[in-house]
Image 1 (cartoon, rainbow, N blue to C red):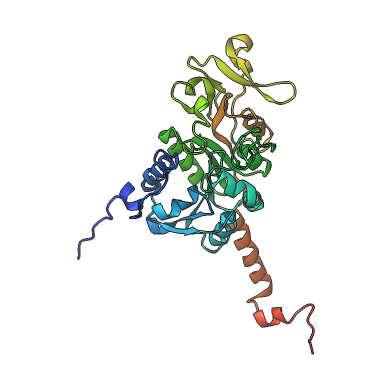
Image 2: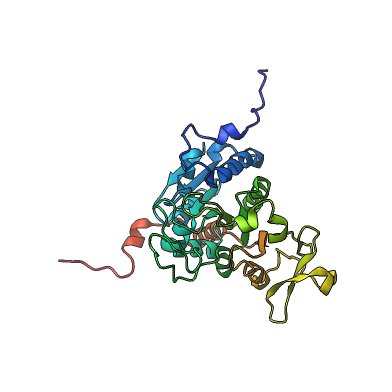
Length: 341
């Protein structure tokens, strides 16, 4: 009997393409790419079982740098293209890489409908609060008053909160991480991968050329303990160097930061990412109304429901069982048909 050799363990290099990575030196995209490439071997998948689909923007170069299947699609439409692929090939792990401009401006409808349908996708939204590829115009997440090339007197637009938007669309999985913590990114991406259905991850990502330091007040090492609120399912929400701060729900149902010594630990909100109703998760997402206040990171919501692919397959199987094999010619000639002479 011929001897068989077990397949060699895969590493980061097996998921890195031979293309030169061409982002600006110091861009936060490098950190995200490294986290994804390091995570892929841990998922137990081979490169040919994974697809990365992107739209338009700096982050959308991502598929070129992954040694997997990939597609650099059109502006804002990556979720729609990924939906078609996920339904046709449910055996593949499908990832969407997008930015705050690509996903939340021209791609807004495509994003929210993928979320509400619960297509089995992992959507990574790089949020740098600026249009980087087109050289520094304000984006749908830029703060009010932002002075840019397209808003020389300050932006008048109220920004989106991506996590809140995803929760409003009732995405089953919503999380937030940032590009200064590789371990947290990898943990968050792994949780997204393990969740069946649409998993939406917002990544605070620094654009050091056009919006440098946008998140420095919360992500710098000297500020993280005081400014980042790590959400852990089943645990009271506490933060601070000595865990002296916490989060409660006030009488209006709003999440509010308090001093633990003043209210008592028993008053703190215990995080329940699996709570079916998204209202408390939404309240938590509203704590970060700007990037210089205590900001929750981690998994806001992880609620399972049937995926879109499963529902489609079940519907087709039921129709076949009821009506037998389809007849395309009969279908085309049925209903409202007329001759044009």
